[in-house]
Length: 315
Ligand SMILES: Cc1cc2nc3c(=O)[nH]c(=O)nc-3n(C[C@H](O)[C@H](O)[C@H](O)COP(=O)(O)O)c2cc1C
Image (cartoon, rainbow, N blue to C red):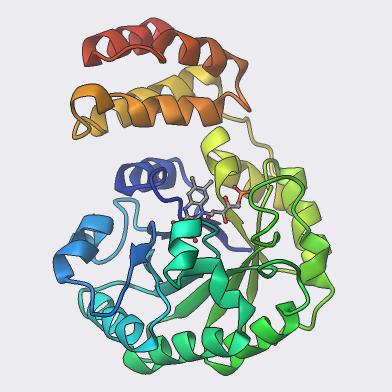
């Protein structure tokens, strides 16, 4: 079983990848999406989204980081993928899942699922532009409005040469609302040469078991679950190996939150602490203590004040 840390624009950035992979259990990360329009993305943009390119495309813990591209123009997607690979990206991931209206209006993300032929053309162009050693994965949803094209989309991805496919088990219309329909993935034919990773609404190790079983997938991707429970990947691996494992307690989590706050000082002025507040709002789902801490820091706009609250928690 492979556990992938999901891409999350504006949430799982370089610092968060560094932090969560240092906790452990992850086999791969994916960057936030890099928007590709009608020309090749400049190198500096790749370095901004993926500072790990400076260290062989891996986090400090040695976990590979695939670069995610989002766009509807096969030519510029192909050229951008080639550039990313030449800079050392260990893999390219293509975003066919983004539900944002502005992104969809500009021919990117989940709108492309309406036409499986377009999924084929984009993946094919990327595949043709990078060497065989570079994996090309795609991330899709069950479909745009419904899942009637799912089988065709999977077939198109396989035919275009995708190495792997990650399926967020909801349609674009279903957004991020629970539940996720893992069994919809299990009901379609899965090409043997293209492993499927299941994603969506996985919060606990027992969700992992259900999601893998119902979707008939070998691998999982964790998004909000990874943020609400920083050692979910470790818990999952221990559970699957029937090993004893003591889940991370709140005092350890507070240490991580302090590390995260200290590493996000590039957010200045009124933005100071925004990422920390955001993370606490995810942690609240799993740790009741996160809720009171969140309510204490939510209106703080001074770094010192926020740090003081974090330090008090750590005592
Ligand atoms: C705030 C936010 C940002 C996201 N950004 C991206 C992104 O950049 N690329 C992508 O492929 N998916 C993105 N996603 C989707 C997640 O990777 C994942 O597919 C989705 O959250 C479902 O998994 P979950 O139910 O475990 O959270 C984003 C989701 C959220 C909530």
